[in-house]
Amino acid sequence: MKHRKQRLQARQQKWLQEVDRYLRDNLDNHNVVVADIAFAMCMSERNFYRKLKKLTGITPNQYIQAFRLNSAFELLNSGQVDTVKELAGRVGFYHTDYFSRLFEACYGRRPVEWIHENTEMA
Image 1: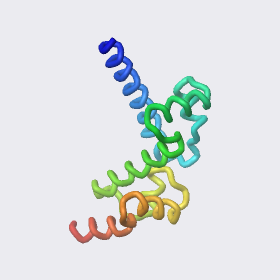
Image 2: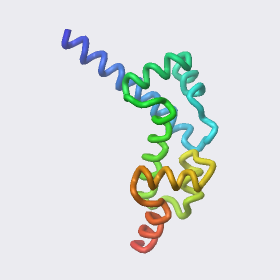
Image 3: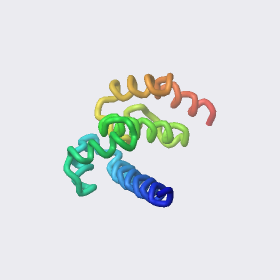
Image 4: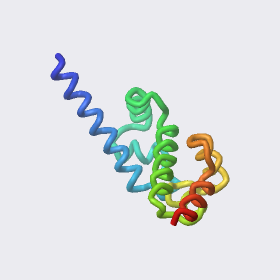
């Protein structure tokens, strides 16, 4: 029984990695919606929603948003962006102000502060 549970967990982990790969491949596309990901995963939108929510505890839209914000955080730390507009666009946000508010709520600082800090250190 334990072996079956471990195998299932590995399968679930692989499934989540496939979702992440799709999001990474389409990161700069602000038009990606849950239906697109479900289609890519060969699932109905409803089944995709249920499975992702069961595995992660959050909704697909929350997962997409968290993935994009985490990607923005990684880009900021790598010093690969010069403006908030560029950063927002690279992680799939169309509205810079909205992106900045979400980023600050998640990380406690506005992205412009990170960019200025990285510029000063360079």
